[in-house]
Image 1: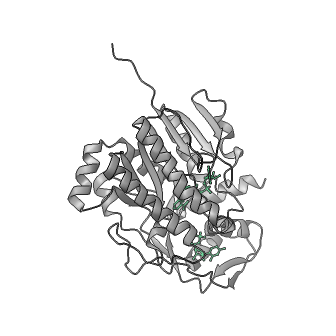
Image 2: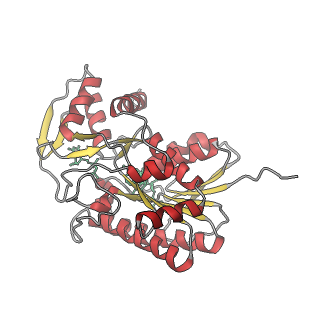
Image 3: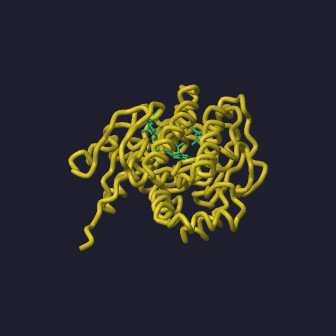
Length: 328
Ligand code: NAD
Ligand code: UDP
């Protein structure tokens, strides 16, 4: 008689914002989950409620060092994602992206695990093509303050593509566009957490530059859903899709194509918090800050049958609720 086999997943960066959501989702689907994290930007609080689950374990480990274990699926999320965090430790960030990716690809190779890598819209840099399609190669500065992250993630994609071509590793990659939601660190430094915290505390809302640069904001549950759909696909379907689209490696954008200026985001935050006494103030634009960002998600729609469901208004309301409770 066929037995129900419990699938095992490794989530690097599992104590971070997105990693902890993914762990929760995998556990709900019946997986045995190991979260690996060095707690650079992640916290034990993010996974505290999971520690009692007998199918969950946490390993304090730095992904730049080799790690061994038998898993069916590896989700490589370890890497600081907020510009404030990765610019604080740029060399560590590059090492995490490159050595971390290599260690996880070696693990996937030796144990025949599938691996999903969390890449980023930053591989497009300050894009000259709008919206950004996967076949666009990007416009990235190699020596700027964002380069440790952008180039690290680009190198990780190259490694993944070559482990697939040279050794046949079953690699899948998502280029994640700005994603937000509960469990973001209140001092994370990214725009949504900054604006909500500022509005809740009646502090000035800091718009960098003229506030007319754009971003497209994806709610965390939509991303987790895309990741899971992607990993569930048989390898043949993924390979056939790459062939059909002329993609050197299976990489798809995941994001919400609704595009907002940062000023519109600030206004929407204040609209949802009418009691706030915060005012909009303007601060200098950090260098290399991309002017426009919006994903083309046609590939994700076709391959995964996926599109985001949560609007910015709804996602923001849930995130505000989370930060409000945190302060109580
Ligand atoms: P996060 O900072 O909350 O999570 C990153 C996690 O990785 C943290 O728990 C951190 O402690 C851990 N980590 C960092 N360096 C590590 C190392 N050397 N070894 C082990 N663990 C390490 O950020 P997030 O938003 O959850 O991002 C998760 C992943 O998604 C990252 O790879 C990021 O590049 C990618 N991503 C996120 C977004 C977004 O908008 N949230 C956008 C694009 C890509
Ligand atoms: N930003 C801002 N005020 C803040 C934080 C960020 O105006 O307090 C801007 C930032 O300059 C960028 C956008 O918001 O144009 C998104 O920034 P974030 O750090 O969230 O992510 P990025 O997409 O730049 O990696």
